[in-house]
Image 1 (cartoon, helix red, strand yellow):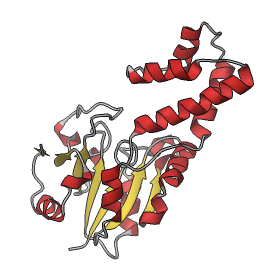
Image 2: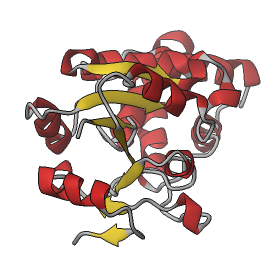
Image 3: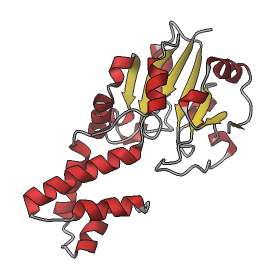
Image 4: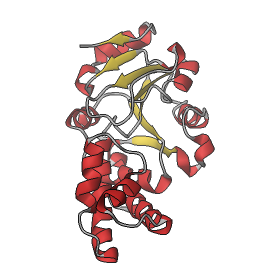
Length: 236
């Protein structure tokens, strides 16, 4: 049986928290240079550490007592999205990708295109044989998950070698609904530091299996998962 494992990226292969911190540092440097504004990074990071992600730069400027100018906010967002991120693969993800499994690999990731491609490059994902690497925003926001286009594109790309597909991702709100409908196995990696919530909107959004590390995704577990697509399991 040939198998393709398809990965999400954010909070699956690395911690999105680290990307946010990297982006904040880039915006902080820009704010000091362009605006002479000190302390933005410290304030913004404290908000993130408190899990306050909404309108982050507006909130940080407000706490600093600085004017909230939409044009300045827009420039900050542009710097954030375009920066070269200082991020690394999670150790368990790196070990899994390097293990020499006889699986096909691919990637499906949402998020603004310029930022997602910068993450792909920073993580060195092409070097691990992930093909295709699909950043859904390349097609436009309408094609973000749970749209079928990316999943069907992976199936088409691997049609000559794979009969079974597994999607490994983190966010039950959007990640698992479509691959389940296509007959894929689905695995949620539930990292304690993850940014997004873990509540599935319905049973159809739930993964077949929940893990906390790629160390748990052994060949035996994969074979069992594919042989017995059943209600969500939880591995301690």
